Picture 1 (cartoon, rainbow, N blue to C red):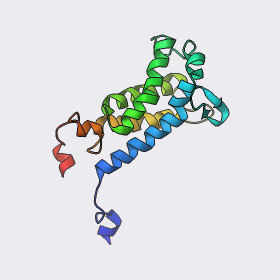
Picture 2: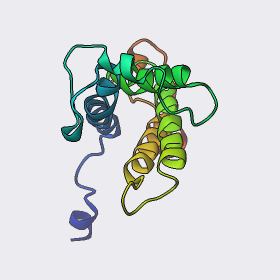
Picture 3: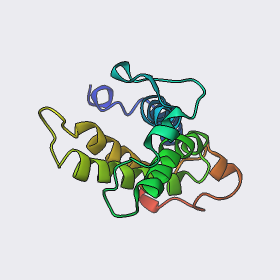
Picture 4: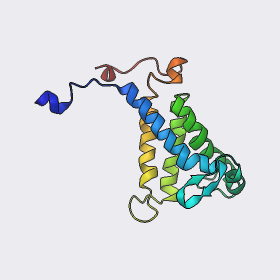
Amino acid sequence: MKKFLSLSWLPLAPDFGLLALRVAVSFLMIRYHGWGKLTGWADESLRLPNLFSLAGAQKEFHTFPNYIGLGSELSYVLVTWCETFGSMAIMAGLFARLHSLGLFTTMTVAWIFHHHLKLTGPGSGELPFSWAFVYLLLFLAGPGKYSLDARLGLARAGRTSAAKA
């Protein structure tokens, strides 16, 4: 019974878990955040982005929030890059740790400055707070063996002894 409840009879698959996490989180980030910032929103209340357009860039490039003093334009480019192209790279596992660090920073800045550290109530930052820790996990764990980083030899060479056990 103890073996059954501890699920030790199921094999661990951390690399497959990292792949599933990378793909799911990246799809959601692109769909609900990055693509809309880049192409604009066909219906912003439904979070429905335009398919192909640069309306988002035209609208937000000079008016994007400048929370950390980089300027609206650079902030827009960095956030849109991370949320769109960085998420595509994370999905493929290409420079995944670098892009995860960028998205961890983006989500942390959003939670602190846009949502004012609120986790409940109207305008709460529960989602960026949660997303930040998902990206922190991906940064710390790396993309796993099912990634372009591993295929191209860009991933860390070995695992720690705790991970091998």
